[in-house]
Amino acid sequence: MKSAENDLKMRCQNVKLFLREPLGNLQKIIRPVRLALAISIDMQDVTYREFQGAIQKSN
Image (tube, rainbow, N blue to C red; front, side, top):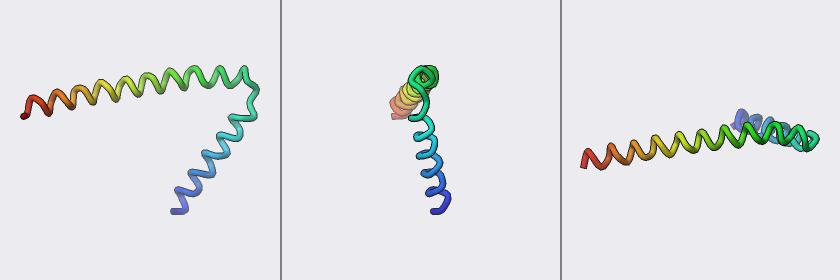
């Protein structure tokens, strides 16, 4: 339980640091994060589709 609390505290600190950054710096950080999210969501979609295909073949 303690490690989960520490993890949460770390995340909160990261958010606070993030919010203190000037807007220009935030833009530099947000763009790659958005791109990374888009890529990971895309990957999940692909694997999900493959998974569905495999299920349909087995039925």
